[in-house]
Every structure is written in C-alpha cells, then in structure tokens.
Amino acid sequence: MKSQNTVLLSLGTNMGDKLENLQTCISVLHKTVATVIKVSNVYETPAWGFEGASFYNCAIAIHTHKSAQKLLNEIIKVEKKLGRIKTNSTQYESRCIDIDIIAFNDEIIESDTLNIPHLHVQNRKFVLFPLLDIAPKWKHPKQNQTISEMLISCEDTSEITTVGTLKNPINNLTLNQLNYIAIEGNIGAGKTTLATKIAEDCNGKPILERFADNPFLPKFYKDQNRYAFPLEMSFLADRYQQLSDDLAQFDLFKDFIVADYHIFKSQIFAKVTLQEDEFRLYKTMFDIMYKEMPKPDLYIYLYQNTDRLLANIKKRGRSYEQDISSNYLEKINQGYLEYIKSQNDINALIIDISELDFVKNQEDYIYILNEIQNKIN
Image (cartoon, helix red, strand yellow):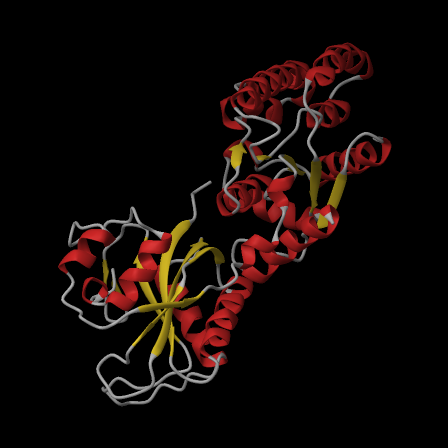
C-alpha cells in the first residue's frame, strides 16, 4: 500500500471574523478533501502588495492519496464554497479565504496551473512562520534550505504577530487511547489500506500481514482440496510468528498499534477450507497459539458485499486471486460474522463499507473514523 502524500498548505484571510474563517476552512478541508494532521499558530501580518486590512495566516499539514492537480481542483471548490470570488484583476485583493499549496511531499511540480513548491515561499514571513510550527525539518527542494534558513535570508520586513490558535479536527478523535486496534475484512475489503491510513493519520504503529510470501497461496487457488491444510497451517504459523515479533517491539500500554489482521482470522478461513478431520487437528494447534496472543482493545470488521469484493479483487490484479468464487467469499464473510457474534471476550465493531470509498472520498473516511469514535465513546 502506497503511503499517503504529505502536503503543506498556507491559509490566509483579511475579511470578517478572521479566526472563524480559518477554523471553518480547516474543518471543511478535513471533512471533504484530506485529513488535517497538523495546524500552526495564527499570525497577523499587514496586507501584502496592496492597501487593505491585515491578514490572519496559518499553515496546515494534510495527508491525501490524491494527486497534486486533483487536490488543487478540490481546494478551488472549497474556496468558492467559503465565499471567495475570484476576479480577473492581476492585483492583490482582500479575500475571505485564500488556500495555497506550498509543498507536496518533496516534489518539484511545474505546470500551467501548479508551481510546487510555491514560487514565493522563501520571500514571505507570513508563510514561513506558520510552516516552522508544523514542518521544521522540511527542506525546500530547489533552494536546498530549511525553513529556519529561509527565514534568516528572507528580506520581508513585515511585522508579524502571533494572535491565536486553532483546533485540529484530528485531535477530536481518541483512537490512540485504545493502544491496539485490529482491522479485519474479507478478501479485497480494503483492511490494509484503512489500517495504514489510520496509522499514518493518528501517529500509530502499523502491523501489516505478510500475505504475499506464502508459497501455498497460488497453489491453493488452483487445487483447494490438496493445498488447503498446508496453506492454513503455514498461515497460522506465519501470523503467530509475525504478531509475536511485531507486538514485542511495542509497548501495548503506551504505543498506538493498528493491525490489518488478527490471528483468529486463521480459524475462520480454516473452517471454510478444511475437511472436518483436518480442522480438528488444526484447531488444536490454533487454540494453543490463540491463548498466548494479546487481544485487541477494538476489533473492526469491514463488511463489503460480494460484488464489490469481486470488483476490488479484479482491480488489484493479483493473478492467483482472479478465480476466487462469490460462494467462497460469502462463506468467509459468514464465518467472520458468526465468529464475532460467538465471542464474548472481544470488543467488536462491524462497519458496512459496501457503498463507501474511503480512499477517493474523504467524507467516507471521516464517516468510518466517527463510527470508531462512537464505539469508543
């Protein structure tokens, strides 16, 4: 799973309730465009390049899977939604909100619509001071200077004053109070994507299953009866070993851990794929290992209908998965739901994501985060 893009934005306003303008802008961006992970202090500076009311400025860091151009398009929509009316004037003007992309990872992007890093970042204190709050280690890929170094050489003599702070919407979540979350789902449900995204956004430690290394998996999809038992035993051994090793690296009372599986998934798949006598032998080994495994504080099951699962499997293009039947997926799903209902010692949350796309649609992702938060509350 590709990591998200880390983007630095500069926000400014010099009309109306300026603090409220910035706070509203952050909230709308977070709910509809990208996850806000850091928010700077608010700084007041004189209007730049024209006579007008002073500006309030801040900077935010966001996480997104969107491209730079797609992000720009959505930012323009947010500006319009918040009341900014762009004119044909080439002169600087007062504005209720102004959002500029300052940096997109460490990339240099030059096109008719985008220049990243922003062309004037090194010349403007009202951009540099907020950036120093949220990204002190960022280095301009063209100037080859840190923000502190650019501030030293900056010729902007404008007076700049700290005037307040803003709320970061991500801080409303208390997911990291749980210490250990396991996210599960059927094949193709998106559990790895969601686990990675939550870990990145909430400063967590991800534990991701090493599924691709199993030599029996392609063979199993061609001849299930022959390879089911060695496949399930090798998965059980590997999951037990990986969880034991990875969880040992972390403090289960201090770290926030997000895993895209838990060892009990092994029993669910085994029950579907193994013959009765094989399953009895398998379960003996499983019960021994399961007793030693730390239990998640919250177990999240992503339910997705079979048609969407098949579409996702086809889209990700793993050759050995292309012949998976809808019947097999339905059995796995039923196994998960029955297992969750039968367990009294796990704190479980089932989220139906059949109509959601939490990678493309930020509102869907926020919905999932809110569902988790509601469960915690």
